[in-house]
Image 1 (cartoon, rainbow, N blue to C red):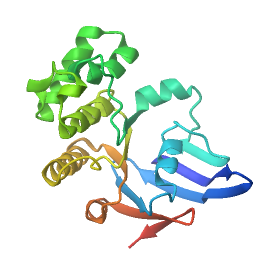
Image 2: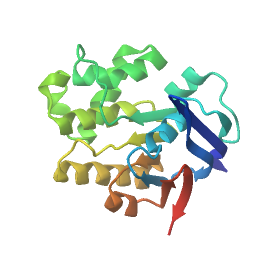
Image 3: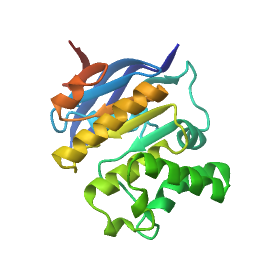
Image 4: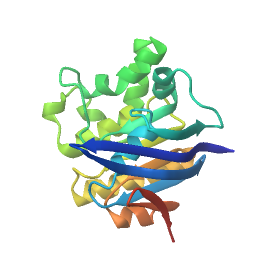
Length: 220
């Protein structure tokens, strides 16, 4: 059974008096444990598509089904079932690295001690545990991004959406992050949908789609 199925998704924006069609009847099926890459030119609508799939934006028409069902309580579903890695991190400045990672789990469980413990375990896996008490402005770009990844994973989501996750990283940390994603996919059957401009990253995924003129095309 598919974990995600998208049928005839459409999205448009108005720019002055002109209607811009960003997504045109997008169809996509994702199986549990797959890792998917979506590429396309700048402004092609890749991030818009990702935000709609992750329930952070709405489509004009079409249907999004998770495990053959339409989520009812969007906020609860997003907190419990979806992980999101943003290119700009969106870490909370007044909270430490550890607290930033723990917050989504605490909002779900209301168990502060357990949330911190789980956050520590993830930071150890990502090899940034020793920086756990530092604030975002004290972290490098790579450390901030790995913190964002840990935050996305803390509720054991069914699917993780990543918007240009290596966009702000150097070559080494970019490779390390993709290796971590691949390892997590292989060992935990974690499902990933990654928007990227990097074709080398796309080649490492199970499937590669390209968004062209609003149409999602499978790449061979």
